[in-house]
Image (cartoon, rainbow, N blue to C red):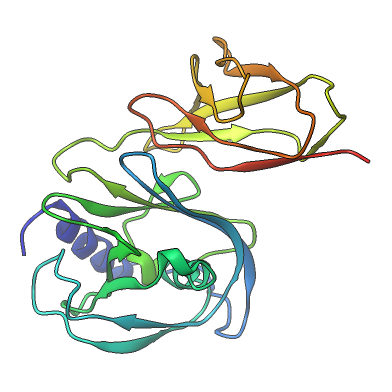
Length: 243
């Protein structure tokens, strides 16, 4: 049971045991939250809003990424949590089923895989809550309305975590009329900075300037994603044409 992922989980659940936590929503409450799951090589597995609430999570004896002796079973996770939201988000995306969850340790469940994206060797799933690393684990990370959750399959627990790209764009624009989008990056303290040179997924779009802006135009609905070398791929933003 070696490695940074297990150590962070142990620390997080130790803190959970000694700290007085804020009031937790009732088990029946559901709140809208945004859930993403992406990999170190830029694959976007999940990027959607769900109504997070109590979930039943299945565990597997094949979830060996954290070591120990995991077993098959199920566990009820009450309230709106990062783990429950992940389970609810992937349930509607057949290519990314099932979750591979470990129950090898008493301190809580651990994520090993989302669909075919399974942690191997030094890889591990980092959890970020509102652009800041969570030390409370998927079960202990409680969510409120409009929170954002990122599950990131990191290349190695021996490498520093890259900053997370964040894309800002309007939801509706006029057809073929130029508008601005902006790309920021959040560090592990939740501090943002503009990103120059970020590439957008829509064809014909230039890279961002020194303030993180790019001016673009579209003739039909478009899905924007920002990428930059060494940084976690951004959220996806759908921009529609105003009627």
